[in-house]
Image (cartoon, rainbow, N blue to C red; front, side, top):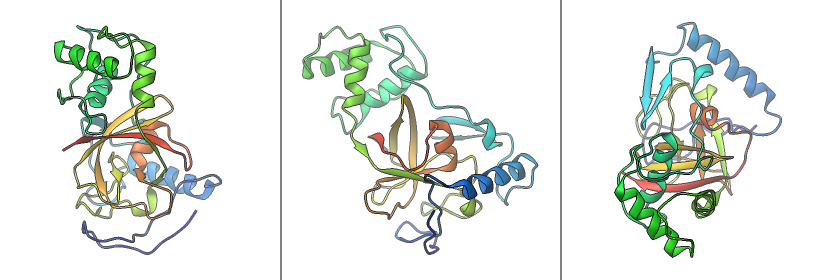
Length: 236
């Protein structure tokens, strides 16, 4: 684990006090566990929400130990009329600036607009243009997401403000990025799970890393150590 200098709570600031997750981070795991105990005991830092909180469309409990896992994508065939979190992941992919298809909005309903956008993607990739998301189409969508380095940060900064002006708590889901505007929605993929969230902070400043996941985002994705993730920029 590595400690760097503390930073001011402004979008233009750069260095910050942070601990990065990684192999052998047993001490940080202990700190996180203690922080979770304090949060669930009502002894969290000032400003810690009670009940359930929501960030970027993801509903979270106040206790970080009960954070719902991010949805999986590609485990079932998707077509018109279906609903569910995996449809929301699909629509996030289609609407992303990165893939450059068309913006159809992010909901959990597979409608005619989704069908047309899937057909457009299939034609572009040389797949059968059925408008149905088969396993092959799902795999190609995921393969179209760029891979980049990532890490995560947590307990030592709980109670501080992020560079985007939000209170950093055990339950806030978000990511840090060096240049994307605050509030930009991004889709982060890791080992079959996909999380639509927002840029809430600045960083990371370790060479080779593009994203810093908040503690809650790390739990939702089942993210481990310092590992590459897939990503798409969905927009504001």
